Length: 271
Image (cartoon, rainbow, N blue to C red; front, side, top):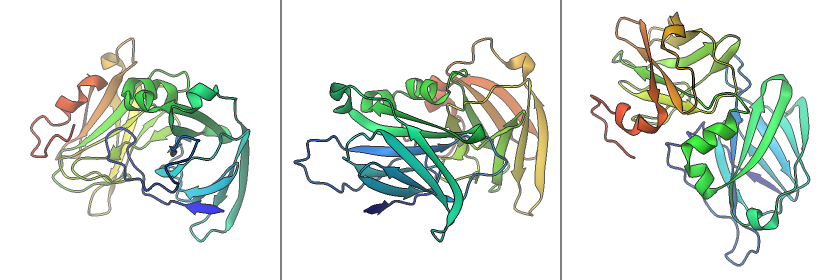
């Protein structure tokens, strides 16, 4: 049986998630969702589909999505097969052994985090609802031993920007535009994009890239060294693209994002 859920990239912390339950209320297994993260650090987001063989069921999704509801038992292995948008295999498969979970904890599981990392690594981690709703906790889990930092991009140009990214060394990250509307790699006018828990080391400089409505791609190297705190845990690296297509940088506490993401903004704070 294949259960198909294909969503656009969604923010796991700040976007509302709409879920349709597929199972009856009498199930003994807990219902839980899946969340995929494309943390490969590649120049472009993976636009292929991923077929997840999850024990008794299969799911199909993009590599950066929150999707699906399941109450299937926790399997011993998970298999990932990449497909094009027409469902044709791309010749890439990965199989991951899953650790055993305490039965009491399994009853509390709310979401399964799947991180696609560089060098064809995949990490699968289960979280309870309380853990998942704690941005700092989830960021720490996703960071895979790196500092638990977030990355935010602000669009101050007055125009819609596309293909926005930040590169640290060889690794690209794609903070998702969430204000006023969610969108993958697109930055809304006067809006913020943010992402959490990137498992990549932070360098002293970053390269910010974006495309303006005239089709021109812009890049700017940003010096960060003098502004980086010694402890990056639960800090957000903020890059603001200004109307003259220059970039300013500052570091702000992730816990305070409910305030600073709306400073001077006409958009309503949804938090």
